[in-house]
Image (tube, rainbow, N blue to C red; front, side, top):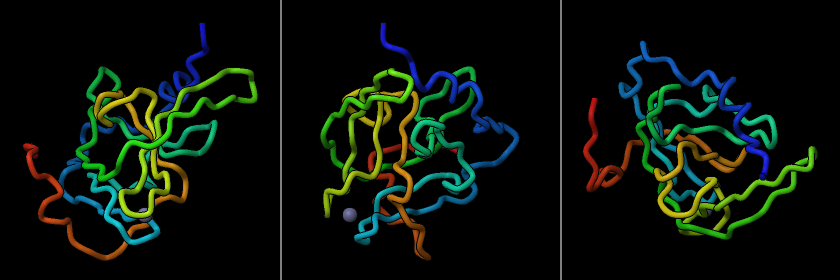
Amino acid sequence: MPKVISRSTVASSQDARPTESSTAALRVYYCICGEFILVIDKVLSALPRRRTDNAIIVRAQDSEAGKAHVFKLNAVPGDSLIIERQDGGHERQFRQNCPRCTLPVAYQPTPGLVKSSEFFYILPGALTQMQGQVPSDAFDGEVLTQ
Ligand SMILES: [Zn+2]
């Protein structure tokens, strides 16, 4: 059986703060090429990070441990990689790439839609925050509940 690397990180994450009104302010993040990548209900710097690679942990599904973030990821599926950890464990990563410059910006542990995994991970340094407004089409086809 492969080791589940993210399990310990998940248990220690601090992202469950149900008292906070998290949808009050949506943040917008861009690829370094300027492409709109992510709109999310929380500043990324306030989210927990993985110990293994310092990637930012974003909860994509509700569970007993916490509620999913409200977010929209504008990315295209990239390569799938097998990462070898220092402790000998292996981890499968399905990359999400910037649709314009194709740089990897995030990854998830399962293939398919980003919300098909309990978490996805934003690569450290991949996104920047700029002054701007949420694109009007960011939530097209999705119901944004408060
Ligand atoms: Zn880009």
